[in-house]
Length: 294
Image 1 (tube, one colour):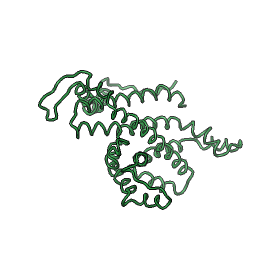
Image 2: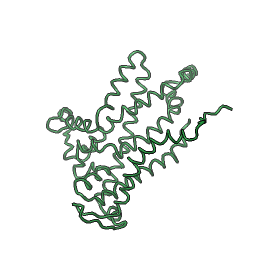
Image 3: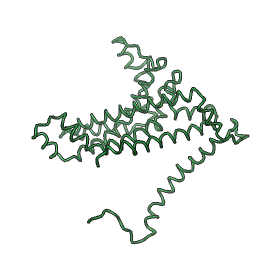
Image 4: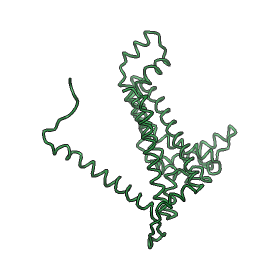
């Protein structure tokens, strides 16, 4: 029986190959994470002259803070909507490009460009597009009777940040979906077509199940992206407003820590956010992965 296991003649070599990655992980993840956990048990004044150990008091205050509970619910809506919209749009675009033959390279290149845009630039771009005073899209919506104003309307603000965050992530999802589609043998779909299965039935019975490993990987990545990497977009478009309607957890960590100088509370929020993301990832691997066919 053939095995894919690699055997190194030198026992030191595997550890030497892993050492750079382990060092990077320790310096840029474990060390900051450990500092955040320790700081979440402390209370510091704004100028750093006095530090007091307060135990779990920072966490208790978070659970009693209505603005933090609001940020939890806002994050749930934002992360779910962003992941669902970016995955759906990317799948539709990947299927459309996969059906093209001669011009697929041009479309693929154009669709990948948004991924090269920095998140802050993407946020500014969408802020200009939807600006109630100088934006083009509010002007067009006003012509059909809808008055857009994301600086006053909570729903408009949430729609804006979801669209901006999804647009930034669609290119990444599209690349993986397209690679997954092109790895599916054409003979399977041709055999189903000969048996009389239409395009819709072939997609749901052959293409989508074979894409399940890619879909599961992208689901995990998109949830992590929506929870952590969307801070620049929130800051550039709505700054968490109006009335805390787009103040997601990662943005509240920044506001409380760097603007309000409440370092203990900000550290506690970072620890809770990390725990939430780890719990969501474990749940996805524990329950969603069962439906994945490798």
